[in-house]
Image 1: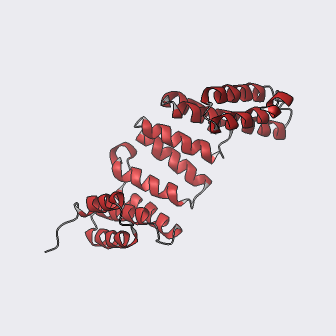
Image 2: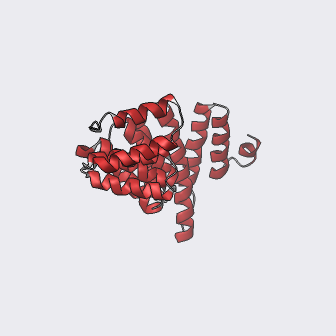
Length: 219
C-alpha cells in the first residue's frame, strides 16, 4: 500500500499492490488496481522495439490478472476476453494460456481448449500436465476436437515418459487412450501399472474402477 502511494503512476507497483490485495481477499479493490495498472501501461512510450516489448508485457500482466478476477467471479466470457488480449500482447505468457484453457473448459468450448493446449505445447513441448490434459480432451471430446485415439496415445505416452512412468493419473490416461484405440491388451497392462502406483484412496479407486468396467471381462 505504501509503495502504491509513493509511486502511484508505475504500472508494476499497481500490479503488485493488486496482488497483495488479492492475498487478503480484497478482490474488488485488487481489480481496481489491475485496471489502473492497465491504464498506466497503455500510456507507456513505445519509441523502439524494446519499449514496445516492455509495454506489451506490462499490459499483458494486468490483463491476465483481470482474467483471473473475472474467472473467480464466474464471469467466464469476460475473463476469456482479458486472457485472449493478454496472449495477443504476450504470446509467451504460459499463465495466461492456462487461465484461458480453464475458462474455455467452464464454457464447454472443447475445440478451443484443444487449440490452446496445442499452442502451450509450442511454448513448453515437454510439459507433462499439458500433454496429459490434451490427451484427456481428445479422449473425452473427439467430435469437437476431431482428434484420433492414437493422438491421445502418443500424447499420454510422452507425458508418461516425461514423468518417469511414476504418475498414476497419467498412466491411467494412457490406459484409457489404448482402450479408445481398441488395444485392450495394452489398456489392461497400463491399468495394472496405474493401480500399482495409485494411493488407496476413494478418488483413485473410483477412477481405476471406471476404466476397469470398460475392459472386457477375462475368460
